[in-house]
Image (cartoon, rainbow, N blue to C red; front, side):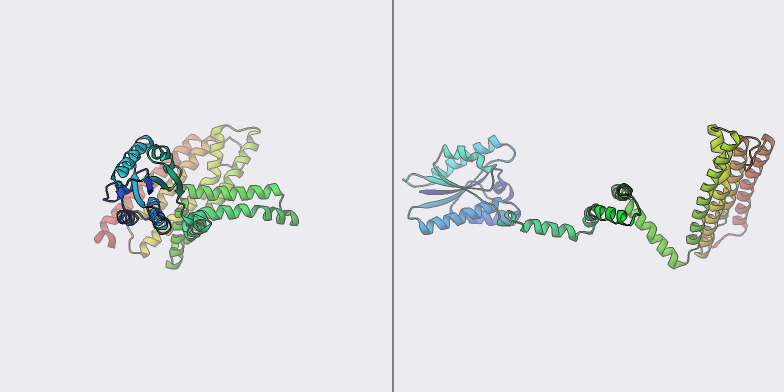
Length: 373
């Protein structure tokens, strides 16, 4: 008698279907295979059961001897316990076979792990052959093709994988073109491309691409909505750039006046002296644009007007304090003595306090539409 023995070492059949193992008989094994495939279509053990049924039908149609099919399982987690469980179930199957003939087995498995139980089975019944079930789709390039196709169809994966790969593939052509036209040296091209790729990876890693997209979307909406802040922000950015340049110019002036390396307070004072008025202009410009947009959107409140005065107050204080630390007699920078600094601090403080009080009174006497609502 020939026994077609389907082995499920990790007991997927027992865990995922209501069938008790071992399962003996063609109809019973077919029902178990259908139940396992229905419960988990991706489980390869269902292919083992169907292969066992196919082998049973093939032998029954071509061989004259008696044939039977059975499914045995182990346990999940431990190979030693699983092998012992399979051995016990094989004993149960052999005891259930009512035949006086010698029983030989054909073992059906789905991989090398399940085949580790072969010595246990061989100790109980002679083995005529072992058949390993390999799904044909996974055997060729079809599964790889569909995997690549799915990756390329996903916008998130496409941007993460293909963009850096495309930049790397363009490195050599960029180097050749740059050298041909003598724009840049090859090393410089590699440095630029490496910097771009590094920035891209950094943006992706930190998730900053969403912030950039949101910023672009707000800029687009502001352009179509006629928001004043779009213009004032551009002007403020230009003023900040000018302020940075002026700060460096003031630092060079202080270095020339000192005749050597200035101290840390002198460096900081020179940078503030050169940039503070431009930075203040940028802050006032952007705040006035924001106030204008709030007014046009009917969300205006009097206290919003404090922002330009606060910026001006801070600028006066910083300018006066930095003037105390710049070297005396240096052309191009404003030197302040302590009494002058005290007066500037007083002016800055009074400007901030008076603006706060003025607009607080205005809110109480002339409430805006937002406050009235």
